[in-house]
Amino acid sequence: MAKKQSSGCNRTVSEQYHQLMEQCKVHMEAMDRELPAAREDLHEVLQERGVSRRDFLKWTSVMTAALMLPPMFKPMVAKAAENFSRVPVIWLHFAECTGCSEAFLRTYYPNVDDILLDTISLEYHETLMAAAGHQAEACLEKAMADFPGKYVCVTEGAIPTGLNGKYLRLGPKGKTGIDIAKEVTSKAMATICIGSCSAFGNIQAARPNPTDAKSIEDAIGVSTINIAGCPPNPVNFVGTILHLLMFGAAPALDGQGRPLWAYGKRIHDFCERRPHYDAGEYVEEWGDEAAKKGWCLYKVGCKGPYTYANCSKVRFNAGVSWPIMGGHGCIGCTEPDFWDTMAPLEKPIADKPIGVGGVEAEVDGIGAALLGATVIGVGVHAGMTALKSHGQPKKTDEETPSHNEH
Image 1 (cartoon, rainbow, N blue to C red):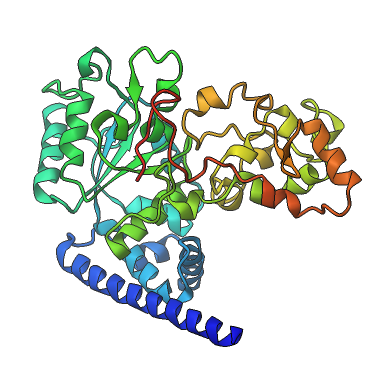
Image 2 (cartoon, rainbow, N blue to C red; image 1 turned 45 degrees about the horizontal axis):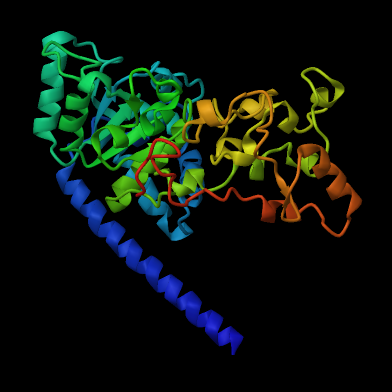
């Protein structure tokens, strides 16, 4: 009987995926008709950059799995990648350091993600465009007029809302950041926040926040897809654009507006130092013998147990390394208000000890409990330390600046 029920469930799931596939095909056919002509042929660019067809197919398989789609969607992911350069992008800068743009530009190896970013159809980007002044403003106005409802608005940086929004006057007409954000996002197919400043306010919104800086969503009330991080990984942006191309909608988001496929697991869950955490082996101070052995960095401030992101899986600089692998703990930069809530950055959070056996305990007791009770085993820790607030309704205004649930 159980087998029959299982078979029925499998058929239902299979039918759902086939239905989703049909929806994907219909949407992508519409995109073929509506999107501007491609500026570059992806396969020619890949060949010029030394990426073989086989490498592209491998990347397609990896990205399909990353987007939590079954293998049957690999041809659609490949097709979406071919259309990547056809999506008009208007990239706005507000209160930020331009580090997110820099992270996208600082690429050294010709992998597929980097090449896709090189071919992206940037209609407006204040840092990269040659135009300035009235010419730049004309480029922005033309892009909005030519591609209404078809362009993606990418926002980088928080918006200062103090002094009735008079901060951040930009361009020859002296429009405020709030005015520009409202105007551009109102006609966009989707608004993607790049980095934690745009997504959550980040450092600009840290206490005492003299300019009353806010996230894009809180400042102007528009729904956003939040690619959090300081800076975020370009792979997460690429995957989100691919999903928009395939389905015409945002991927599944968590309670903070972040794509679940990229931010659905804690850094801690896939960290290469995790076995040392479970064994109670910690770096006590920088440069000690434990640090040389690559032991867990929790005691010197690693916020991996509280941080949701895929840094430990996709890494940075073409997958070469990431902060914990490089020897420094995670600072929790993908989480809202991390500059305040994760401080001090090189010490554990005193009021957020990790639980053992359902009982909150200080980190010194964790290793002893795990080592002293063999029946607990290594796996039990993973099942009982999920961050309770992840994917849940956000805090009220009295607790912390709000970020409306999606």
